[in-house]
Length: 252
Image (cartoon, rainbow, N blue to C red; front, top):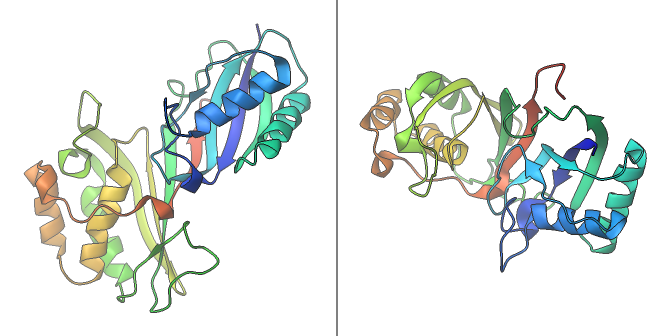
């Protein structure tokens, strides 16, 4: 029974998140249905990250086990054909046979997210639904300096959802960079794993720094409080993208 790795991109605005749900459309379910229409098999797709409703991906990774050793390109093209027929905003970028030891979730050694903010008086037209519009001028340099407070190993209770199911709030944040290119501010975050809503919570708090409502000391105090109530605004899902997942060279 060959195992296939799927590299996936999707527009999350049409879905209630990655994870299969009984009464709402999900990315996982849409792909599973397309696979069943392709080869007649009911599969359970395991993804590297359970993105929330409205969150997008350019580099999601998942794996499935199929009964037949289909050619890689056949799997990609056939599943995409059925996704297109269903008018899904999902594409399989690549399909490849991998060792049975590969697990899209548990083999991952790093996850990378991008959050985009359009910072101008005029709202977004072309990127609507894929970027956060903040009309008040933000100081991206101040946001970047403040972001350094969050780097490293910390208890991120302040920056996780009250519905987070992780056993441990301690995570190691490897990267949190803020940069501006014209009217767009980009926040890039990397870690082995993230808590539920962690990236959006950090972005919302950095936005408070950027608009002058918080200082670096305020952000540090929020982190140290280990209290969800100390978090700033949670950024909307529109601007968040899962852009990549890392694996050991031999596994994926």
